[in-house]
Every structure is written in C-alpha cells, then in structure tokens.
Length: 275
Image (cartoon, rainbow, N blue to C red):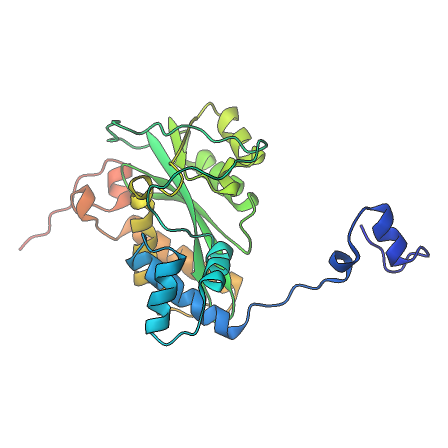
C-alpha cells in the first residue's frame, strides 16, 4: 500500500491510509538464538506436561538455569501457538467474525475410516528459526491424510491441507478441531460447509478433547523432529514427508491392533510373520 517511490511523502500516504507512522517504518526482527533455545525447551516441556501454564513453565525453566519471567514465557507460547490443556472458565470474548461450534464427539463411538477427521497445528523447531505443521488425521485409524508446513498460523495452510485430504480421500462425516484462529476462519469453515461436513470444536483448553492429536505430535517430534536439525523450510517439508510416509505405511500402532494406519484405513488384515 505504501509506495516509497511515490511523489507523495510517506507521512502523507500513511495519513491517507489511516496507518500509524511507526507501522510504516517497522521492520520485523528475527527471533533471537536465546528465544529459539527457550522455545525448543518449552515445546519439549509442553509435550511432557501439557497441563503446565506459563507460571509452571517459568518455574521449570528457572530450575534448569533459564533466566526468564512469566510474561516472556507467555509471549513465546503465543508465538508457538500453544496453551495449557485443562478445563477453565470461558472468560475471554470471541470474535463475532469467527464462529465457534459445539463439540459433537461426546458419547460417539468412532470405529471406521472417514467417520471423524481431526486437524491441529504444532510448532516445529529448525536449526535456525521454526515452522508450523498442520495435519489432517483420520481419528479411527490414526492415518495422516494430508499436511502442510508453513511459516505462520494463518488459515491458508489449514485450508490447503483440508482440500487435499478431501480430494484424495473423500469427505468425512465430522471434522473436529480446536478453537484456533486458523480453524475458525471463514475460508476454512466455508470448505467444511461446501462439503456438508459436520463441524465439531473442542472446549477451549480442554485436555480431554486434545489428547488424541497431542499423542500424534509427541510421536512425530520424539521419533523425528528432535533427531533432526532442519536447515530450511524446504528441508523440514521434505524430511517430514519421508517420516509421515513411514508413519502411515510401516509404523505399527498398539491402539489399532499393531496394524499400520494404512492397514487400518484400507481395512487390510494384520500380517502375521512366521516365528
């Protein structure tokens, strides 16, 4: 919107556009090495203790030698897109532009492919910087149906992953997500409504609703992400693609009778090896 080469002074352009001068001249700063180290450790602690809020995380970090206060921990958690998982009063107002839908899975037996899908986004550390991983998962079979690696929490990645999952696998009866802004955005909701998919959302901060996808993130991070130092966004995307293919096709799960997600999704029997 602002054109530095225009004959009109930048100050006047900002006035006409009703923008503050500070926002015009602001240049985003890269995340410091110290903050990246803190974010990596916060991510690990969050996986181990998902109930821990900013106060507890601050105390845990202080005991490990990190000199950090609660406000800075809160800022980093917000940047990472994480919060403590526990039931708490719904005291914060919601954006009227972003509707929130009821939780539809209470008491529901989920036992077949494409009955319920789940989506979530998680923070992924790299050697320098970080990215976000958004995945579409079939609830009953644990199969990752589509995913996107992105540099922001905008809705674009969620919309792209959802459209790919539908194109490749058909339409689920219900989509369950949390109340993150990418999943309450109009573009995302419009895709669900276009395909007449039931919309279910977890209670804000409720550990019970999030535990299924949290287990997926823990598996991906401990079995792959923490063992690799991704050099770039493209490197993270390529290596995660290889791991998720292994996860779907070759990694057995005790929760689905030691079958792989692909076996369970396509209803293939367990291969019994000779002793």
